[in-house]
Image (cartoon, one colour):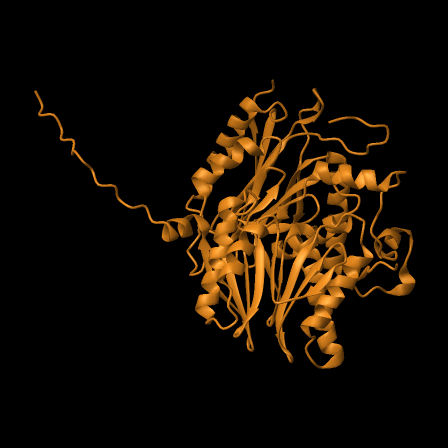
Length: 221
Length: 273
């Protein structure tokens, strides 16, 4: 993108993905941070744990992401002090939407995905645009590699729209292991064709027993 | 013009005297953060182009004998990319009032949620439901105060109040129009064609719903930025009810079924040698 005298944003590249299942949620993001054609670091986490059952991954401008994560963590802390409990994932989802919209005229250049378990223990994924419009979905991907990943997820996971009436059942058919394997596969494929995606992928799995983390190596070229 | 900042209140119970350095940023008077640059309009134009927020696209509503029909598609696009095929563009403000989303998805979602809060506060303060006129005026005043800052909202407020069915069109330029038939969005010219030619005041609810469904289908057929699921709602004296949600791909084959072509010469398998 053109660099102007006082242009305040830059795109650090990277991709993030999330899949919601019947009783689990998988969230993953690569760990490469780039500016233009340079790689600044191969070891940068784009994932942030906001609450016990709520994790956020984002791609875009990592400076804005750090500020956004700190903002949300502070608001969550206040919530915990006032309500004596952790925020649920749907509540955090609306908080994130409002936080993003409060900067409507000076946006956070972050494309976020929120993943976790809702109050019934079912997996949920919320996908956002940069200014706060959000929707609960079964799976999502954002970032420079999203265009390569979403068609594969559509092919494997697409389910009847929740807007259909009479409603059709829409449970992701995959088990937790299958979903993690799918995520590893799509990242490996995206790494082949997207220069900004690679190095490592950090995969978090949220289920009833807590949050499990895995790191998988990707191509470093 | 004083901006409406009520959307930024977070309603926490702040012990007013305990504001120290730590809390200053969080508890300071709410205001939208603005960039410190010389060319605000240029910045907004560039930022919105970079960020490419999701936009939504064909909605319609009309008043007829039995109330109001509201219909919309469900596609959201970010630039040329379809970011979602399952966006809720008909927003349920309260059990007897609906709002539609066209333009910026985040703008519509945020300000409709804010409108719902204001309507509820009105009910609590005045012990009666707010009228459609009042609700649309609240929204129009908010949007007018942000006029010129780049919000993109084209919405219709539809409801049933003491005066009967009500329908208003409100947009981010500050316009507010009362009317009986509206369609908003990039697919609206196509929807108007079908809606205007088929409209009669005395239709049954089923006929009106079918007209709305067809209008949305035709808009999704010709407009690339519309698609997904065509939802149809009806607002009657007892409030709104969702009548149908149909995938427009399936509607296509329902309206234009594939006729089996007669085969002139049947091909038979060659006998195995």
